[in-house]
Image (cartoon, helix red, strand yellow):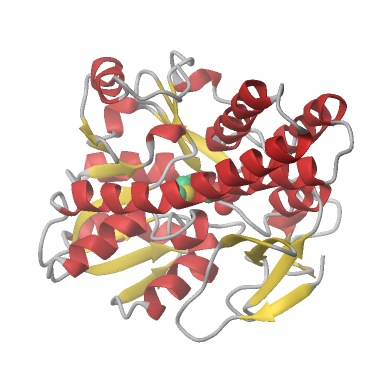
Length: 356
Ligand code: MRU
Protein backbone atom coordinates (compact mmCIF):
# COMPACT_ATOMS: atom_id res chain seq x y z
CA UNK A 1 0.00 0.00 0.00
CA UNK A 2 1.25 3.49 -0.72
CA UNK A 3 0.17 6.95 0.34
CA UNK A 4 -2.08 8.65 -2.20
CA UNK A 5 -3.25 11.86 -0.60
CA UNK A 6 -2.67 14.25 2.23
CA UNK A 7 -5.36 15.30 4.65
CA UNK A 8 -6.60 18.84 4.51
CA UNK A 9 -6.74 20.60 7.88
CA UNK A 10 -9.50 19.80 10.39
CA UNK A 11 -11.35 17.33 8.25
CA UNK A 12 -10.80 13.70 7.32
CA UNK A 13 -12.58 10.68 5.95
CA UNK A 14 -11.91 7.39 7.73
CA UNK A 15 -12.76 5.18 4.75
CA UNK A 16 -14.21 5.76 1.29
CA UNK A 17 -14.98 3.77 -1.83
CA UNK A 18 -13.26 5.41 -4.77
CA UNK A 19 -12.72 4.37 -8.41
CA UNK A 20 -9.07 3.54 -7.63
CA UNK A 21 -9.88 1.35 -4.60
CA UNK A 22 -10.73 1.53 -0.90
CA UNK A 23 -9.13 4.66 0.50
CA UNK A 24 -8.52 4.91 4.26
CA UNK A 25 -6.64 7.25 6.54
CA UNK A 26 -3.60 5.41 7.94
CA UNK A 27 -4.30 5.28 11.68
CA UNK A 28 -0.88 3.83 12.46
CA UNK A 29 0.71 7.11 11.38
CA UNK A 30 -1.58 9.55 13.16
CA UNK A 31 -1.22 12.07 14.65
CA UNK A 32 2.24 12.78 13.25
CA UNK A 33 1.32 12.23 9.62
CA UNK A 34 -2.10 12.42 8.01
CA UNK A 35 -1.74 10.10 5.07
CA UNK A 36 -4.29 8.11 3.09
CA UNK A 37 -3.60 4.65 1.70
CA UNK A 38 -5.42 3.06 -1.20
CA UNK A 39 -6.18 -0.66 -0.99
CA UNK A 40 -6.42 -2.05 -4.50
CA UNK A 41 -7.33 -5.66 -3.64
CA UNK A 42 -9.19 -7.54 -0.92
CA UNK A 43 -5.84 -8.87 0.30
CA UNK A 44 -4.66 -5.30 0.88
CA UNK A 45 -7.89 -4.52 2.75
CA UNK A 46 -7.37 -7.62 4.92
CA UNK A 47 -3.79 -6.52 5.64
CA UNK A 48 -4.98 -3.01 6.54
CA UNK A 49 -7.47 -4.42 9.05
CA UNK A 50 -4.95 -6.87 10.54
CA UNK A 51 -2.24 -4.21 10.85
CA UNK A 52 -4.67 -1.64 12.26
CA UNK A 53 -4.26 0.87 9.46
CA UNK A 54 -8.01 0.93 10.04
CA UNK A 55 -9.42 -0.13 13.42
CA UNK A 56 -12.49 0.27 15.61
CA UNK A 57 -15.42 -2.14 15.35
CA UNK A 58 -17.75 -0.29 12.95
CA UNK A 59 -14.86 0.92 10.76
CA UNK A 60 -13.48 -2.57 10.25
CA UNK A 61 -17.01 -3.74 9.39
CA UNK A 62 -17.18 -1.13 6.63
CA UNK A 63 -13.66 -2.03 5.48
CA UNK A 64 -14.51 -5.74 5.31
CA UNK A 65 -17.66 -5.03 3.27
CA UNK A 66 -15.64 -2.90 0.87
CA UNK A 67 -13.01 -5.66 0.75
CA UNK A 68 -15.68 -8.15 -0.35
CA UNK A 69 -16.90 -5.72 -3.03
CA UNK A 70 -13.34 -5.09 -4.23
CA UNK A 71 -12.65 -8.82 -4.36
CA UNK A 72 -15.75 -9.36 -6.50
CA UNK A 73 -14.54 -6.77 -9.03
CA UNK A 74 -11.31 -8.72 -9.47
CA UNK A 75 -12.86 -12.17 -9.71
CA UNK A 76 -13.64 -13.99 -12.95
CA UNK A 77 -15.39 -16.79 -11.06
CA UNK A 78 -17.53 -15.40 -8.25
CA UNK A 79 -18.86 -18.74 -7.01
CA UNK A 80 -15.29 -19.98 -6.61
CA UNK A 81 -13.79 -16.77 -5.20
CA UNK A 82 -16.46 -15.31 -2.88
CA UNK A 83 -15.90 -17.91 -0.11
CA UNK A 84 -12.12 -17.39 -0.35
CA UNK A 85 -12.44 -13.59 -0.17
CA UNK A 86 -14.85 -13.73 2.78
CA UNK A 87 -12.70 -16.26 4.65
CA UNK A 88 -9.57 -14.11 4.26
CA UNK A 89 -11.40 -11.06 5.62
CA UNK A 90 -12.97 -13.03 8.49
CA UNK A 91 -9.53 -14.17 9.62
CA UNK A 92 -8.16 -10.66 10.16
CA UNK A 93 -9.33 -9.88 13.70
CA UNK A 94 -11.50 -12.05 15.99
CA UNK A 95 -13.21 -9.83 18.57
CA UNK A 96 -15.23 -7.04 16.93
CA UNK A 97 -18.41 -8.66 15.70
CA UNK A 98 -19.15 -5.85 13.24
CA UNK A 99 -16.55 -7.44 10.94
CA UNK A 100 -18.50 -10.72 10.78
CA UNK A 101 -21.83 -8.90 10.68
CA UNK A 102 -20.74 -6.93 7.60
CA UNK A 103 -19.34 -9.99 5.78
CA UNK A 104 -22.52 -11.97 6.57
CA UNK A 105 -24.57 -9.11 5.14
CA UNK A 106 -22.47 -9.05 1.94
CA UNK A 107 -22.81 -12.84 1.60
CA UNK A 108 -26.58 -12.59 1.98
CA UNK A 109 -26.71 -10.01 -0.81
CA UNK A 110 -24.55 -12.29 -2.95
CA UNK A 111 -26.90 -15.23 -2.40
CA UNK A 112 -29.91 -13.18 -3.45
CA UNK A 113 -28.32 -11.87 -6.69
CA UNK A 114 -26.15 -14.88 -7.63
CA UNK A 115 -28.44 -15.92 -10.46
CA UNK A 116 -27.92 -12.54 -12.20
CA UNK A 117 -25.05 -11.58 -14.51
CA UNK A 118 -21.59 -10.98 -13.03
CA UNK A 119 -21.64 -7.24 -13.75
CA UNK A 120 -24.97 -6.87 -11.95
CA UNK A 121 -23.73 -8.90 -8.98
CA UNK A 122 -20.56 -6.81 -8.66
CA UNK A 123 -22.51 -3.55 -8.93
CA UNK A 124 -24.89 -4.75 -6.22
CA UNK A 125 -22.02 -5.69 -3.88
CA UNK A 126 -20.34 -2.31 -4.35
CA UNK A 127 -23.67 -0.61 -3.70
CA UNK A 128 -24.19 -2.60 -0.49
CA UNK A 129 -20.70 -1.82 0.85
CA UNK A 130 -21.24 1.89 0.22
CA UNK A 131 -24.64 1.66 1.87
CA UNK A 132 -23.13 0.08 5.00
CA UNK A 133 -20.77 3.08 5.22
CA UNK A 134 -23.53 5.66 4.79
CA UNK A 135 -25.80 3.87 7.25
CA UNK A 136 -23.03 3.78 9.84
CA UNK A 137 -22.71 7.57 9.85
CA UNK A 138 -26.48 7.98 10.27
CA UNK A 139 -26.50 5.33 13.04
CA UNK A 140 -23.78 7.16 14.95
CA UNK A 141 -25.70 10.42 14.77
CA UNK A 142 -28.74 8.64 16.20
CA UNK A 143 -26.58 7.14 18.99
CA UNK A 144 -25.34 10.67 19.68
CA UNK A 145 -28.87 12.03 19.96
CA UNK A 146 -29.99 9.27 22.36
CA UNK A 147 -26.85 9.44 24.46
CA UNK A 148 -26.37 13.19 24.77
CA UNK A 149 -29.29 13.45 27.20
CA UNK A 150 -27.39 11.20 29.64
CA UNK A 151 -24.29 13.41 29.78
CA UNK A 152 -24.27 15.57 32.93
CA UNK A 153 -23.83 19.28 32.21
CA UNK A 154 -20.85 21.05 33.69
CA UNK A 155 -18.81 17.88 34.31
CA UNK A 156 -15.99 15.93 32.70
CA UNK A 157 -16.61 12.87 30.49
CA UNK A 158 -13.99 10.13 30.69
CA UNK A 159 -13.43 7.91 27.65
CA UNK A 160 -11.12 5.03 26.80
CA UNK A 161 -9.56 3.97 23.49
CA UNK A 162 -10.96 5.63 20.37
CA UNK A 163 -14.65 5.26 19.65
CA UNK A 164 -14.78 8.29 17.40
CA UNK A 165 -15.02 9.15 13.72
CA UNK A 166 -11.81 7.19 13.15
CA UNK A 167 -13.33 4.02 14.63
CA UNK A 168 -16.45 4.30 12.47
CA UNK A 169 -17.42 5.63 9.05
CA UNK A 170 -17.82 9.03 10.73
CA UNK A 171 -19.00 10.93 13.86
CA UNK A 172 -18.26 8.08 16.24
CA UNK A 173 -20.19 6.21 18.92
CA UNK A 174 -18.85 7.31 22.34
CA UNK A 175 -17.34 10.45 20.79
CA UNK A 176 -20.58 10.92 18.85
CA UNK A 177 -22.42 11.19 22.17
CA UNK A 178 -19.85 13.73 23.36
CA UNK A 179 -20.07 15.68 20.08
CA UNK A 180 -23.85 15.81 20.29
CA UNK A 181 -23.76 16.88 23.97
CA UNK A 182 -21.41 19.74 23.05
CA UNK A 183 -23.66 20.60 20.09
CA UNK A 184 -26.63 20.78 22.49
CA UNK A 185 -24.73 23.42 24.44
CA UNK A 186 -23.67 21.29 27.42
CA UNK A 187 -20.57 22.64 29.12
CA UNK A 188 -18.43 19.55 29.26
CA UNK A 189 -14.81 18.66 28.85
CA UNK A 190 -13.23 15.29 28.09
CA UNK A 191 -10.55 13.21 29.78
CA UNK A 192 -9.09 10.65 27.39
CA UNK A 193 -7.15 7.62 28.62
CA UNK A 194 -3.99 7.16 26.57
CA UNK A 195 -4.94 3.44 26.14
CA UNK A 196 -1.78 1.40 26.39
CA UNK A 197 -0.32 -0.35 24.53
CA UNK A 198 -1.55 0.83 21.12
CA UNK A 199 -2.27 4.36 22.36
CA UNK A 200 -5.55 4.92 20.52
CA UNK A 201 -6.45 7.55 23.12
CA UNK A 202 -3.19 9.48 22.98
CA UNK A 203 -2.80 9.27 19.23
CA UNK A 204 -6.36 9.29 17.88
CA UNK A 205 -9.03 10.40 20.37
CA UNK A 206 -7.34 13.59 21.47
CA UNK A 207 -6.42 14.37 17.84
CA UNK A 208 -10.05 14.10 16.79
CA UNK A 209 -11.42 16.10 19.69
CA UNK A 210 -8.77 18.77 19.34
CA UNK A 211 -9.84 19.28 15.72
CA UNK A 212 -13.42 19.80 16.92
CA UNK A 213 -12.27 22.35 19.48
CA UNK A 214 -13.59 20.21 22.37
CA UNK A 215 -11.77 20.83 25.66
CA UNK A 216 -9.73 17.63 26.05
CA UNK A 217 -7.14 16.43 28.56
CA UNK A 218 -4.97 13.38 27.97
CA UNK A 219 -4.34 11.14 30.99
CA UNK A 220 -2.45 7.87 31.36
CA UNK A 221 -4.64 4.83 32.04
CA UNK A 222 -3.48 4.52 35.65
CA UNK A 223 -4.70 8.06 36.46
CA UNK A 224 -8.35 7.16 35.85
CA UNK A 225 -9.06 5.94 39.40
CA UNK A 226 -7.62 9.13 40.89
CA UNK A 227 -9.87 11.35 38.79
CA UNK A 228 -12.96 9.14 39.24
CA UNK A 229 -12.53 9.49 43.00
CA UNK A 230 -12.08 13.28 42.74
CA UNK A 231 -15.75 13.90 41.88
CA UNK A 232 -15.08 15.82 38.66
CA UNK A 233 -16.02 12.96 36.29
CA UNK A 234 -19.75 13.07 35.49
CA UNK A 235 -19.80 9.85 33.48
CA UNK A 236 -17.64 7.39 31.59
CA UNK A 237 -18.56 6.67 27.94
CA UNK A 238 -16.85 3.97 25.89
CA UNK A 239 -17.54 2.05 22.68
CA UNK A 240 -17.77 -1.73 22.29
CA UNK A 241 -16.45 -4.48 20.07
CA UNK A 242 -19.04 -7.10 20.94
CA UNK A 243 -21.96 -7.18 23.36
CA UNK A 244 -23.39 -10.52 24.49
CA UNK A 245 -27.10 -11.22 25.08
CA UNK A 246 -26.74 -10.61 28.84
CA UNK A 247 -25.13 -7.18 28.31
CA UNK A 248 -21.52 -8.19 28.99
CA UNK A 249 -19.32 -5.87 26.91
CA UNK A 250 -16.05 -6.62 25.15
CA UNK A 251 -14.07 -3.45 24.55
CA UNK A 252 -10.47 -2.26 24.53
CA UNK A 253 -8.26 -3.71 27.24
CA UNK A 254 -8.56 -1.55 30.35
CA UNK A 255 -12.30 -0.96 29.98
CA UNK A 256 -13.13 -3.48 32.71
CA UNK A 257 -10.86 -1.77 35.27
CA UNK A 258 -12.44 1.55 34.38
CA UNK A 259 -15.96 0.17 34.84
CA UNK A 260 -15.12 -1.25 38.27
CA UNK A 261 -13.57 2.06 39.32
CA UNK A 262 -16.62 3.93 38.03
CA UNK A 263 -19.00 1.77 40.07
CA UNK A 264 -16.82 2.07 43.17
CA UNK A 265 -17.11 5.86 42.84
CA UNK A 266 -20.82 5.93 41.84
CA UNK A 267 -20.04 7.36 38.40
CA UNK A 268 -22.35 6.13 35.59
CA UNK A 269 -20.61 3.90 33.05
CA UNK A 270 -22.17 4.09 29.57
CA UNK A 271 -21.47 1.97 26.49
CA UNK A 272 -22.34 3.49 23.09
CA UNK A 273 -22.61 1.00 20.22
CA UNK A 274 -24.69 0.22 17.14
CA UNK A 275 -27.04 -2.77 16.99
CA UNK A 276 -24.45 -4.39 14.66
CA UNK A 277 -22.15 -4.72 17.71
CA UNK A 278 -24.69 -6.94 19.48
CA UNK A 279 -24.05 -10.65 19.33
CA UNK A 280 -27.15 -12.15 20.89
CA UNK A 281 -26.02 -15.62 19.81
CA UNK A 282 -23.66 -15.46 22.80
CA UNK A 283 -25.27 -15.96 26.19
CA UNK A 284 -22.52 -14.12 28.05
CA UNK A 285 -19.21 -12.37 27.52
CA UNK A 286 -17.34 -15.55 28.50
CA UNK A 287 -17.85 -16.74 24.92
CA UNK A 288 -16.37 -13.65 23.24
CA UNK A 289 -13.03 -14.45 21.56
CA UNK A 290 -10.30 -12.13 22.80
CA UNK A 291 -7.58 -11.18 20.35
CA UNK A 292 -4.02 -11.65 21.59
CA UNK A 293 -1.67 -9.31 19.76
CA UNK A 294 2.11 -9.31 19.38
CA UNK A 295 4.18 -8.96 22.56
CA UNK A 296 6.26 -6.34 20.74
CA UNK A 297 3.35 -3.87 21.07
CA UNK A 298 3.98 -3.97 24.84
CA UNK A 299 7.76 -4.29 24.93
CA UNK A 300 8.40 -1.71 22.22
CA UNK A 301 7.14 1.76 21.36
CA UNK A 302 7.39 2.65 17.66
CA UNK A 303 10.39 0.34 17.29
CA UNK A 304 12.10 1.52 20.48
CA UNK A 305 12.69 -1.26 23.00
CA UNK A 306 11.27 -0.41 26.46
CA UNK A 307 11.63 -3.75 28.26
CA UNK A 308 14.62 -6.06 28.69
CA UNK A 309 15.46 -8.37 25.82
CA UNK A 310 13.75 -11.76 26.15
CA UNK A 311 11.06 -10.73 28.69
CA UNK A 312 7.64 -12.35 28.20
CA UNK A 313 4.76 -9.93 27.62
CA UNK A 314 1.01 -10.54 27.47
CA UNK A 315 -1.09 -8.49 25.08
CA UNK A 316 -4.83 -9.23 25.15
CA UNK A 317 -6.32 -6.46 23.02
CA UNK A 318 -9.75 -6.53 24.72
CA UNK A 319 -11.40 -7.37 28.01
CA UNK A 320 -14.97 -8.15 29.01
CA UNK A 321 -16.89 -5.91 31.39
CA UNK A 322 -19.65 -7.81 33.22
CA UNK A 323 -23.11 -6.32 32.73
CA UNK A 324 -23.45 -5.35 36.43
CA UNK A 325 -20.97 -2.51 35.83
CA UNK A 326 -22.80 -1.14 32.78
CA UNK A 327 -25.28 1.64 33.65
CA UNK A 328 -26.77 1.72 30.13
CA UNK A 329 -26.09 0.69 26.54
CA UNK A 330 -26.80 3.49 24.07
CA UNK A 331 -27.79 2.33 20.57
CA UNK A 332 -29.29 3.99 17.51
CA UNK A 333 -32.66 2.51 18.48
CA UNK A 334 -32.63 3.79 22.02
CA UNK A 335 -31.14 3.08 25.43
CA UNK A 336 -31.01 -0.36 27.02
CA UNK A 337 -30.75 -0.85 30.76
CA UNK A 338 -30.58 -3.94 32.98
CA UNK A 339 -31.88 -6.57 32.73
CA UNK A 340 -30.13 -6.59 29.37
CA UNK A 341 -31.38 -10.03 28.27
CA UNK A 342 -34.76 -8.37 27.88
CA UNK A 343 -33.89 -4.78 26.92
CA UNK A 344 -31.43 -5.74 24.17
CA UNK A 345 -33.92 -8.21 22.64
CA UNK A 346 -36.58 -5.49 22.68
CA UNK A 347 -34.28 -3.03 20.90
CA UNK A 348 -33.60 -5.51 18.08
CA UNK A 349 -37.28 -6.20 17.38
CA UNK A 350 -37.92 -5.69 13.66
CA UNK A 351 -34.20 -5.26 12.84
CA UNK A 352 -33.54 -7.55 9.85
CA UNK A 353 -29.84 -8.21 10.20
CA UNK A 354 -28.22 -8.54 13.61
CA UNK A 355 -26.61 -11.57 15.19
CA UNK A 356 -29.12 -13.35 17.29
O1 MRU B 1 -8.09 -2.53 18.70
P1 MRU B 1 -9.03 -1.46 18.24
O2 MRU B 1 -8.39 -0.10 18.15
O3 MRU B 1 -9.75 -1.85 16.96
O4 MRU B 1 -10.12 -1.39 19.39
C1 MRU B 1 -11.15 -0.45 19.29
C2 MRU B 1 -12.05 -0.43 20.46
O5 MRU B 1 -11.91 -1.18 21.39
C3 MRU B 1 -13.20 0.53 20.39
O6 MRU B 1 -13.52 1.02 21.66
C4 MRU B 1 -14.42 -0.21 19.81
O7 MRU B 1 -14.08 -0.83 18.61
C5 MRU B 1 -15.57 0.70 19.59
S1 MRU B 1 -15.28 1.81 18.24
C6 MRU B 1 -16.68 2.70 17.95
